[in-house]
Image (cartoon, rainbow, N blue to C red; front, side, top):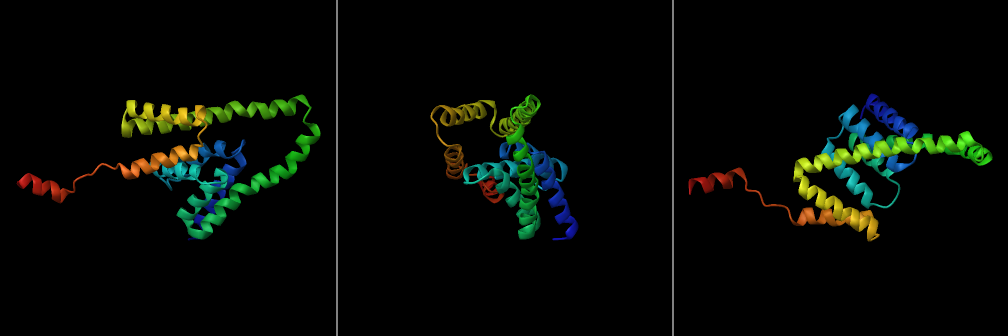
Length: 193
């Protein structure tokens, strides 16, 4: 892997680390923007698969996704580069700002500043959710997409089931219930009969 490509990986994930205020979930739309829309390293479907699998695995998604995506783009060096780039801003910011926040947390404008970011993160997450719902609608149709989203929401929010179990069950069902498609040769033989 060339050094210019490693630089692209580093600066892309550094941007995500710098702008991903609020932790892992708020970084997901930023990762999508960088790796799918900006650089075209992944397709939307690949990103959705990586996100689903990353949600089933233990640990913070803020390092799992960059680690895998960096590995996929640039091998082991790309993995290390992406993870370091995304965590360096967090480490530096935590060291510098946590001291300031704990010292001045009762000051009104600091409290307001931390609360002001919440709506922005909410809009970013809503946009990503809408994009995934639209992709699901195109693949499965509205009725199946809404039933699956409602069932998953019910299991996660009302039944208290961990999202990893829901995603794992859906992945297992997709593997086990794959429709059998006929190959071109089988279709040709059937047409001859």
